[in-house]
Image 1 (spheres, rainbow, N blue to C red):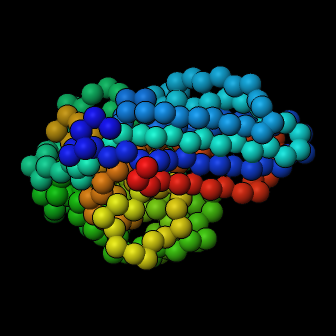
Image 2 (image 1 turned 180 degrees about the vertical axis):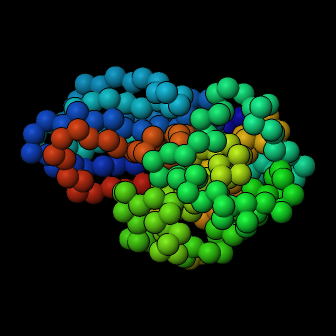
Image 3 (image 1 turned 90 degrees about the horizontal axis):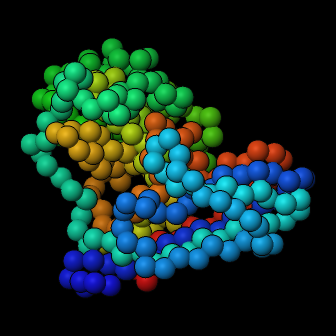
Length: 272
């Protein structure tokens, strides 16, 4: 750890156990982003041993490709990562940019996507948030509303649940909170992208929820991306990004092409 006053060393990782009826080509996205915090050490383990190769996807994420064998297979990733000890950045003066001034590569995050049907909530978005002064405060107002409107409950969301489904149900998990906020931002022409990763319970009072991957989102304001978290609705320490995309469909932790049954998943993120 280079500077104990400004950085923390975290232990993060996950383990999946699958049972397959036949070989199943798969994509894993569980490693912290390359341009993010410093990875001090990491290990990948598969039982049985499996060949693999890594690549960079359309969104700059670094997935790993491998083929699950017939039968039982366990995949484990474990890392020690140095992160900033500071809370998420904030700037209440950060401005929204007119669409014509947005960088070309940002425009995709203003459009509807599979789980974030922003065109279907455009009227509601402008009715609810159109009078809020544009900028960082308007995005935070969206987070405040989502946090106060949706009820967090495990087991209330399915892989195909959209932001509109979560809104109608009034409940969901962190994935749904992020989807709903992203949807309203895009309806207001604010670029927003879905983000997920590891998040330890640092400076968070108990009781603690079972550790899992976490989802939040980023909004593009004043020429850069800012972190927003409608599920927790507070700035956090130790947030580690794994992947970013239009919505959860772009950044699944594991994608399998074949009959593969997940038997167990364990996630960890804590001070090392």
